[in-house]
Image (cartoon, rainbow, N blue to C red; front, top):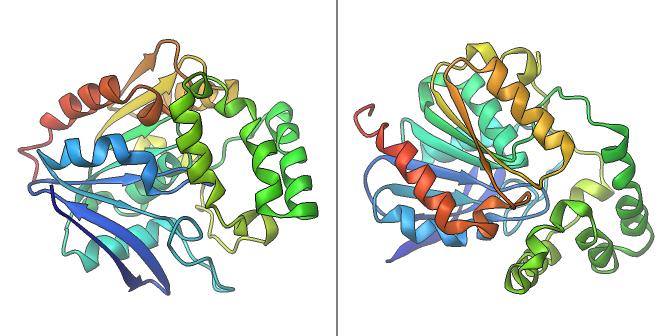
Length: 270
């Protein structure tokens, strides 16, 4: 299936994006340190049913790194959708991408049809000491030796251990992470946090929400998924057995089946 792969200058930055298919719009948002290739197993499959967009968030993949100006990922997404003349979309986000999806839905509810949160972060959540300490060696190695030297330390993080039982997935994810600029580790990020943070506003989300979590994901992500399920009025949660943090890559067939089934109910909402 043919796709458009290009760049656009929006909201004071330059974003890389890809579009394929036709029908109701669905947009995929990747997590921290990765890029839109995380969705390789979804992009063509979903494009058989929907107009599908995936993009590299600011500072990741082929998109521009942040400048000194303050920005928000939600505003970047809004500007991208306006550039594409898309009034509203279903938003699917993995890890940090899930947090962006939540912030977008809260800032622009009229542009959000439904949300799928995949091992999602949650703005305002207080990360555990264990989580914070687990990143100290990565930041230290990055600061000392740079991105390439840091990659083995990053790949050794327990976040990726379940998925790395699959050698092909390990090789692909290592390839993706090796292309991360490291900008957010080496520089203060002028990203604008929600005020109030999303964790305080979850009861305002009125669209349907599907929460997906890997059984073997780390405790902080399970804690956030429980908060999301408890606080969002129209949410349901599915746990993937024997699966870790990167569900779209670790269990693509099951992921696609569940999410496509969820999206069917949105077809009459546009």
